[in-house]
Image (cartoon, rainbow, N blue to C red; front, side, top):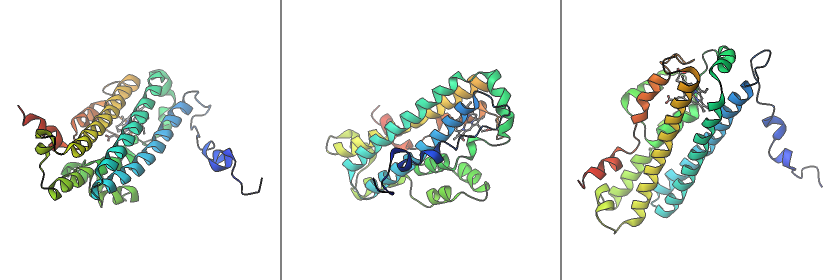
Length: 244
Ligand code: HEM
């Protein structure tokens, strides 16, 4: 074996990776490692989801519909994984978390730039939200980049208009099955994302209760319940009603 021949630990940079979980409680609370691990691994999955969303954007922008269908299928699988991880925190007891929560200061998941970038690329761009994001100066480059790019619903709408199609046509006839498959994949993505939001609120209520303010200063679960109705693809949802 040569010196630069990779091994499992060197290829994966395991020494660095496994040195990054650093509890702040002293003496160390036995549940802080769980809390850190679920957050860090969520960020790793967010990184991959962002990467895959970039590929999905390219496929849609270039009219490669079946490639986009495959791509959104992968993103949906990744979303299910990141959502499933939240269940690990169901086992965090309220009394246990209260013992190390003070060490978090004002840090909060609301500061996750990757999560914000995912929301932006997925199409969450209402004026209030954009104003809130832009007030968080300096903007993280990941957020800035997402803001400068067309969102998934914008790209999908462009694709339909290039082909002189309306969303309704995809459902009213069987002539555009591939595009309909993509539309349905995007709706499934929206559902997977909503599942994350829902389970996250459930975890918060389970661990700190429904009315306890967050470390980031929000009204906690109460405030996040308002985000459960957010829609990335309102047109694709609305088209259903046109058949009734
Ligand atoms: C015990 C577990 C958790 C609790 C008690 C909790 C609590 C909260 C609270 C209260 C907020 C609202 C902002 C604030 O005032 O702080 C929030 C936002 C957020 N948290 Fe968590 N969280 C937990 C786990 C997680 C995990 C595992 C992740 C994964 C990365 C995460 C990511 C986020 C994100 C992205 C937001 C912003 C959501 C939005 O604005 O729509 N949280 N969290």
